Length: 266
Image 1 (tube, rainbow, N blue to C red):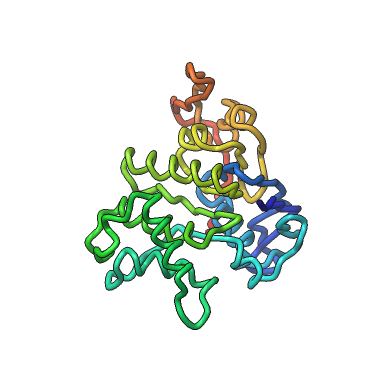
Image 2 (image 1 turned 45 degrees about the horizontal axis):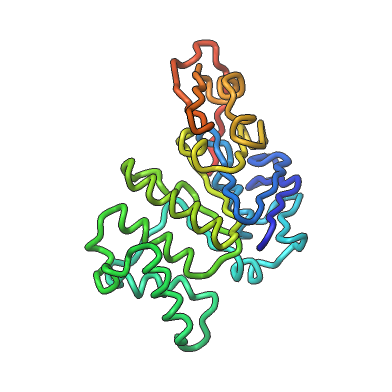
């Protein structure tokens, strides 16, 4: 179990640029923290900083109170970027086994093979084990990428829009799987989502970014409020409560007087 703390993180690619402006939040074991916000809000940049791919100008990311090196971070963090691909010459088993790379020595051990088999079974991918990845559907390939992230046995899981190009069923199946693994394995999961209803359904907490700053952070109902979404997205919405105590976001119309600033960042 690892608690992730993002503390007053600021970042820009040059001295005059501010992509992230003092971002702070916490992600707990067994929980899903969804990062949402308009295009260009700095969501993907934030995940790269947590993964120690980018270094902040100031502020820090702590894992259980420790500021880990990049090498130490890769041993406990699995990061799945938005644009991920798998070489078509690999079988599903080989592709998932590659996810064990941070733990491998000069040869594959029996333990690595067993962990790979177990993850394939838990994700119901064992029937595809010998199939080449270029023979899979888009949803199946995405499931293999998720398996590749989980086979590392991470304490922290970072996912950048893992369901953005999938149909409704595949979106639900993958997010159900992520939620189950997060709770059962007590993983601190941080996921970028564009669909506010998926965030409302699966997140324990939400970080709403706007122009590089945290506009709102907390439980689903405290963040997804009509006045907040109107301010950030420039859209009038209705929030409907469901029988299961969850909420749904229904966009009504764009606001004609919206003056939201758009910045071009990753």
